[in-house]
Image (cartoon, rainbow over all chains, first blue to last red; front, side):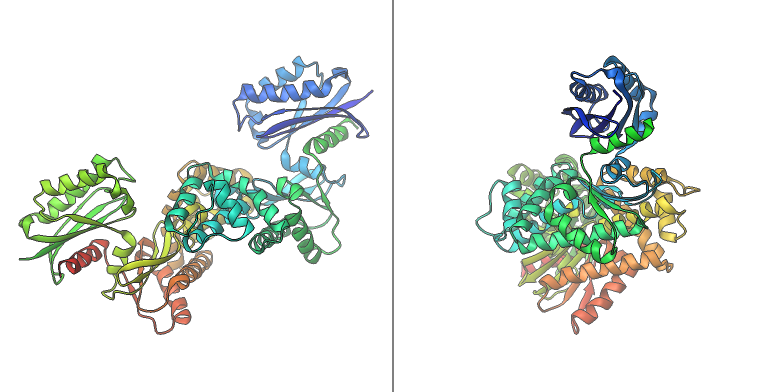
Length: 305
Length: 305
């Protein structure tokens, strides 16, 4: 039997999928954060190894003929210490082929289409669009991080929701589903009366945590929009407009793949975006990416042939 | 002789002005950061005391009949430790009246007009508009901090300039005065060729410093706009539009005072704003605030009568 291994390694979890060459699932494993940007190298390696070990359960590791690890920041693997730490762990599990690190953007694209050329739009904690030509990334838009950009990302949705709530707290007790849920999540309560102090408490609490944590408020926007909250719907429309502009900067032809936690889990944002894209890029095939490990396994299978 | 003391205490400098009741200058002193939010309490008190000591040079401190200290975050003075530390230092200089802490927004307003009711628009590192009625602040707009708002502030100008530059670096060597100066300031050089790496270096350098430091790039926008750079002029127009919206949220009648480092030192932003305000609020008297210590001395003089 010829098997391939696809890994999706991130700052929250590591997932390993083993398939046959035609994509049939043969094994799966999941463990904690595996990106050495997010956690210490030894912990990252241990998590990735745990995921692969679970996926290999009952399988012969020498039958894995190709392996791809999707990860943000592949440049880290130019560091021989990083490359050796992962390499030793994989060899220790009985793998006989090298595991190739591939950027998470290319993997996301492959998780949504088998076409070699097209575009991918990712909105997760950050936001980026990329043009893929013959399997290579040839251009990007946005992806410049929460401080400077990432418009329409989970961070952006969370920040805009927090800003709306802070502005309201000065002048009135929040009434909408979105601003009430943000106040409750951040302050633990909805203030009984509007005040500068209530707003300053909210702002202070958000400044006290890492800014990217604002993305934890994005699901509140999704929930409120799904319940018809007008402020949340307006935010969703603005996010979709930003993401449409971002994609339009790079897209030329071929399919468009939508990926990232916002576009895969927030139906309101995804639906608003698809509507805008239908107007802006009529006739374009749009698909939603499957799990990253599926994209990585597909890329690994292509490398065998 | 009846004298009054006005202090402008900030996170960068402390300035003390002594005037007669009708505003004639009698003494001035300047020292380092005096806001205990920015520096340790003992250092803050020492700076403020140094400024007052210099201002009192050759004067009789007992002739000072009223004193106002303009400072952001007057709530700190509810802490008896903070109040006592400043009180002891002032007493040690021979002052026989208490020094009243007054919010920097009220002081900025007083530094621009003698009218008891009107509005003030401040764009410095942050941005806020406030409604003043009979000397009291009765409403605000924005002022929610760099993470959530402060649209049109020095931080905002710096961030937008950095974002423009990061986006350019991916695809072309910056040609404009603004993006070239941002690249030079942040990277020390203008990359010879466009690359994702050059953009990532810029983004990484900016993420490595406190976000508010982006306001140091605001003067580059002013300089480039003054030289006709189209990207800088577009940013200036967007800043002016944000600030106009911010002011319009609170303004009802009376004069409008413009304050803060952006509006007092950036002629392009100030001119663009005044043009928009002339359309939006026709017939409104617009003035630019003088130094904060002048506003504080005016408030102190009013408290005597």
